[in-house]
Image (cartoon, rainbow, N blue to C red; front, side, top):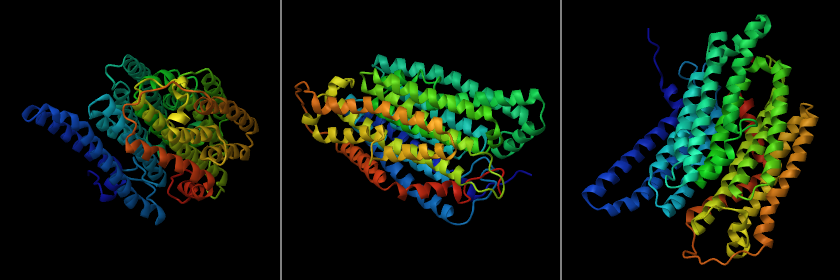
Length: 530
């Protein structure tokens, strides 16, 4: 007998379904624009990109509202079915709702910035379609409770991003960045898939719940060969995920790709792709790999990776003169900070029935808060760069920011807010985010890791505050600005992000309890809890 699907199953993936429908609508508009250009007038092509972009923006707003209307009431009400949806392959819990919201915010901001960026470069509108397809993959990664669904989501996210990175077809750097990202991403995906194959072979399952039981049995009763195969599989799977989050030593692609990609896409990669990878990483860690937490080797690996990632990212960023490359190494450093939170999560141990899990929720919610904060800070910083690129049509070196406080005082002020926040200066959201990560590390007695993170935050202040020195204390070249007004959308993105950075930074306690609920209110499935 073939098992039947219920309405619940389709509602659990409502966000990917709606994104697919909006993408199909955007494809239809793209095709209609081409037909109209052939039958009516070629000048129609001038408006095609704007129409597709506006349609995408409206669709994302609708999906965000509908997603909350459908996803929030169950989260606040009765507990979720322990088996999940689609026979346990998808888990539509509060964790999924949070990350779907984060992905949609990043996509909305990227769409608004792209409307100005692509208009200035006279590009076509297929970029919006690819953006929607990548968000579908992100949503599947966050909600997946099965390694096959996770991998499908990963590739659905990655392939459109490869194309978006090289979407400036006449830009050699963009083409080079896309090729590098494609080749290295393909190798990372191959290693990850081989790890999944090993895990399936040794545990007999690709579902997180059954895999957790299989992993536990191998660690308790398995022979040395079985344990070796298990650890190799876990390691290969983590290599693929660490590549996506740009953790050292899997970070080499990041500077070139961030520099060569169109600036709105760079901001989207730095936020959406990183958030999706950490969403899958945390989900897999506390479900499928929960028994591995007790292995001291895993904690040592996370410790070393966190130290190397944040230290190399910060030290190398000091030498950068290109702002996008500097933010690329900054992104690597922030991945290291998040790995500190992941190490604290691993140090919290396996949650057993009836055991207090306050440390687990504290570590988990600190990771979610940091991802939220990093999204606002980074999208705002890249939003300022998009505005300046539209004005100058050149790559953003530090010298191009000289005198910005005189030429564009509003943009300079918002850039200052984002740089202060990225540096972890109170009262901005970056300070609260780093505080919660350090607090979780100290709670789990990872004192050395906490101290190293504090030292790295101090190092990062140099290159973040250097941008303020250049903007406010160095005279800039005189420019002839043909269009003194910037698109309204760029102002909207920058103002909203700056407001979020300031307001949540002043009142972080209004957000943290909600993120704790994501882990604590029975909506997140733990394989070893009642």
